[in-house]
Amino acid sequence: TRILPIAAADEPILHQPARAVTDLSDPAIQRLLDDMLATLQAANGVGIAAPQVFAPLRIIIAASRPNPRYPDAPLMEPVVMVNPQILWQSAETCTGWEGCLSVPGLRSPLARSARLRVRYLTRRGDSVEADYEGFIARIIQHECDHLDGILFVERVE
Ligand SMILES: O=C(O)C[C@@H](Cc1ccccc1)C(=O)SCC(=O)c1ccccc1
Ligand SMILES: [Zn+2]
Image (cartoon, rainbow, N blue to C red; front, side, top):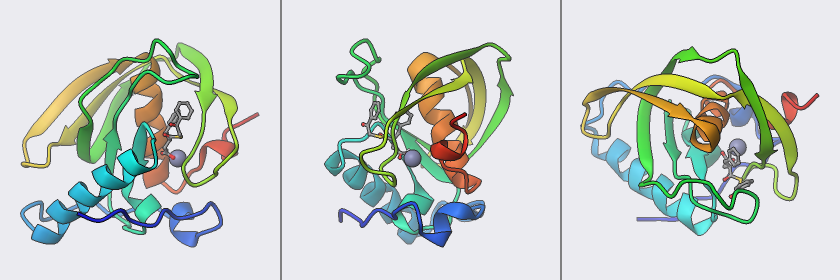
């Protein structure tokens, strides 16, 4: 398992759409998932998307944990989502602080849908549909934006 370099905001890979994963049994994909998790933890983040470690693939990890800005953030087992699709998101939004491992030192309040329903593949290839709300929903929206080449700073009013 390796800690991977994280792309800075000016890297082209962060501004282009990522490709769907077609072969989850590929050992290189399984290794990438392990490396993303190690990189996320080393960076002390609450989420990461494959393009941030220079892999143009539709893979995200959400790993909410209580932190100074979100003392009441849920502590969750990191969830790996392959080819995530947001099936529904609430018109109702909530505003909260966001940061980005690719934009170090910058934090900004941002409005996101308060609730969403996501369909994704687990790292074992099982299809899952799940509902999220609050900070975890925020993280998932932030990470899914990375898969479409969108940085949170582009959404700040
Ligand atoms: O760049 C990333 O995708 C990681 C990013 C995820 C994220 C944080 C906050 C809101 C939405 C998505 C980070 O983990 S930034 C660093 C961090 O740990 C943090 C920043 C602000 C609030 C809470 C945590
Ligand atoms: Zn980010």
